[in-house]
Length: 418
Ligand code: C6P
Image (tube, rainbow, N blue to C red; front, side, top):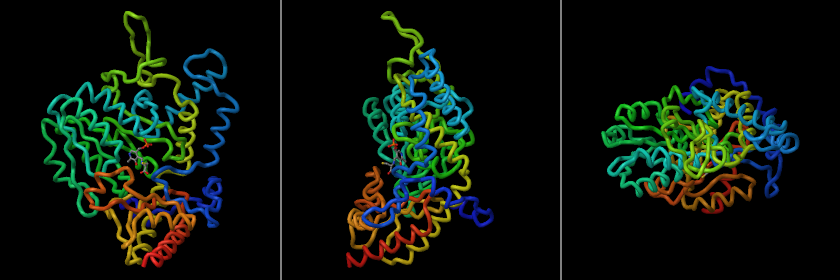
């Protein structure tokens, strides 16, 4: 990211890359006879041994259902699960522990808000503002809601660099705007959006704000109170944790007023055929047996990132980004897609005369994992007038040597296509 990039020059990095890489067993293998270079971190991150061991520890030592049993194992599991909630609270600096809901991930979190807050608060003719940079997860739930309620979706445009048109955004905000939903960092282009400013503008217009943090929490310290976010969402699997679990942060006042979504065990206080009363926060939104191991291990993953330091991660990844952009800019047949001033460690690009899928396939033959295609951002690709991109997304366990391998892979691919 731009700001962090400047500060790396001033600050001495404290990333011990050798130690960190030794903690990721998956990285030490060959793919197609070449050392694996994993540059698909925006899709999902790899897991350190601490996380893998914590999964083993849970099932080997204290697997039990939570919030139910008086027996020892159930209490140990419940304590570990609720400890993870406190870790998550601190991870994003939420004011209250009960403002952290455990969900199945970003997609689930956004659907929860659309189906509860949305169905209660959005009426016919109300406006929902999204941006061209959104992932399908932050488009489709709102389209479903808008269709049901007769609401109108408006979209903030982008400039050539893939930055949001802030003047356009301001002109869309009006009395009819009830919700504004945008990502903190774009998964397809890496753009870091001015979310604090966008939130303040939305609040001035009387709108509620949801920030999709799927791509920001892995790369930077997030403070939901400082951002004044009403809702903030993310997935554990992008922060070195397990799949199928994540967080929905919501301000207490909003969550209290929202009706529950899924009904079942855990989310109730009393049930009778004459009527049911609901549990307190956060349990009102956590029906059924949750992903217990997932929640606990998500907390372990957060501890792991905290121990390295999100600031160190941001600074190191900014160096990788700078190095990658500099090296790839020497290849005249590469077009960068997304050149925002403030950017996360994502390089989206196309090779002249080659389809992204073909470039990705050749890189895979060389042991290099990238993502190709629309990155679940079809409206963005349509706006850019391209079928898709090749995306190399870096994590704190990647190295400059791996970027060199990508560059020689691209040189090789180019020779094959020309
Ligand atoms: N993006 C990518 O390769 P889930 O699948 O629920 O964990 O996250 C969905 C999601 C929502 N918003 C953003 C900004 C995202 O990047 C993602 C997931 C992955 O870019 C997989 S499609």
